[in-house]
Image (tube, rainbow, N blue to C red; front, side, top):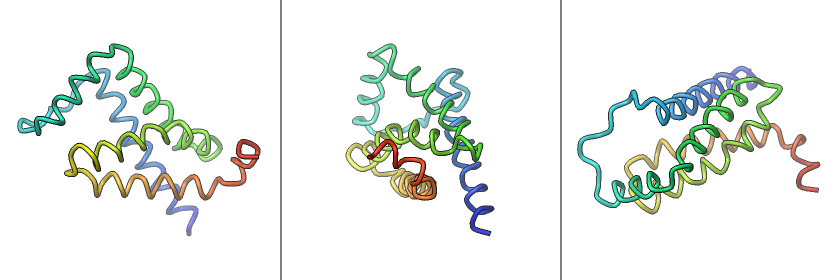
Length: 125
């Protein structure tokens, strides 16, 4: 039962990150009309560095795809981890409106990494 729950959560988690990565390339989701000023200035700073958003989008796409597949889930979690840290920092420091969703995603990622801890032993030492 635990494996099935983890699979469903990993599937939804992966699909969310695939969607976020695709949106960074194709801009199909509308931006909120009323965004706080500090959030707008941060997004403008991301746009200044021309390679940063495509890199994040690529990490979200690849990590999302890998997290869905059980054999590559551990690698996908490692790829998504720095993006998730950025999401958590953005939602705690800059604007807290999405903090609950970010915490839920972080807990899911933490569970995925915990379940794959044996695969990380060679990396840690």
